Amino acid sequence: MSSQSKRREMDVMKLMMNDYVVETINDILNEFIVGFHGPKESLYEGGVWKIRVELPDAYPYKSPSIRFVNKILHPNVDETSGSVCLDVINQSWSPMFDLLNIFEVFLPQLLLYPNPSHPLNRDAASLMMKDRKQYDQKVKEFCELYAKKEDIMKPTAGEETDGDEDVTDEETCSSDDEIDGRADP
Image (tube, rainbow, N blue to C red; front, side, top):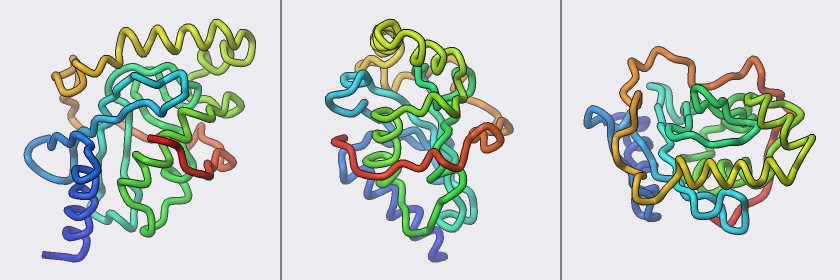
């Protein structure tokens, strides 16, 4: 078994040992769905999302592709594809990072500190900048409609994709979207 395969298995095991629900796609560790809970004390608290993770053959030397499967309202998440604009994944990835970093640090920080200046979802960014109260209410509505805990591992319409779509959007992401710190998962 190659060191990359061992690392892939170890990273997935770390997720499961930290109480993340992980469901493989086609029984391989290159593609899987992870249950992700919104950060505490945020608009997303109480919401649960399916995150599709695709590990390239060169993982951990090449970053994973991640996207939200169920809908989320956020300026830095594409409304249609669920792709995420996050510099640390799209541009600054290092083999020192692992999947646990993504789910315990990078994604919570993204939800806690949206960057409407470099959006993938221009409507959400515009609403956030023009009417924060209405934006906050709409985020909570999306959580109620699309991110219920009881629905987390049920199949979602359109979830089975052919894998040909681009799940990162580096062209519209800015390199100054770096996120530091650690969130309460």
